[in-house]
Length: 131
Ligand SMILES: CC(C)(COP(=O)(O)OP(=O)(O)OC[C@H]1O[C@@H](n2cnc3c(N)ncnc32)[C@H](O)[C@@H]1OP(=O)(O)O)[C@@H](O)C(=O)NCCC(=O)NCCS
Image (cartoon, rainbow, N blue to C red; front, side):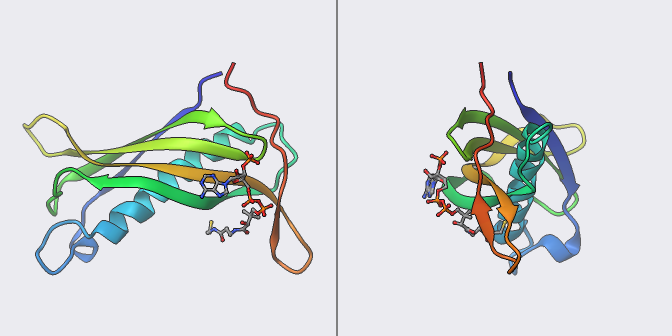
């Protein structure tokens, strides 16, 4: 089965850095949420409580994003392990009357977990296959 999700955000003044474009840390947090969205979708019919972010790889900022632009995030599960999901996230900037452009991309490793009584997490097998 193929798993994908979409998620959008409008760049507001509080999302910008000191040069007036979208702050990179804000972009990464939106990408993390986009990765979580598709991972949550995978957890249907699975015993895990939730997923957590274990690693981020290959984050690239291809283009700056301006205030007032939309950021459309697409997340796709590209591989699965026993407890992990490898998720590709692409963020496309959109401005009225212009072509969408790839602004940022990265790979997120999310792990399916159950919560321990002390509030910590333990990884659990998710049993998901992409076939
Ligand atoms: C998630 C957590 C419970 C997993 O602990 P663990 O049982 O020791 O398991 P590991 O981290 O060794 O491995 C879990 C999976 O992640 C994979 N993994 C771990 N580090 C990785 C990395 N750097 N890159 C790619 N994959 C990685 C492992 O290969 C394993 O995958 P598999 O089961 O599919 O083979 C623990 O690391 C944790 O609580 N981390 C903090 C999470 C967090 O707070 N995130 C931020 C908020 S969401």
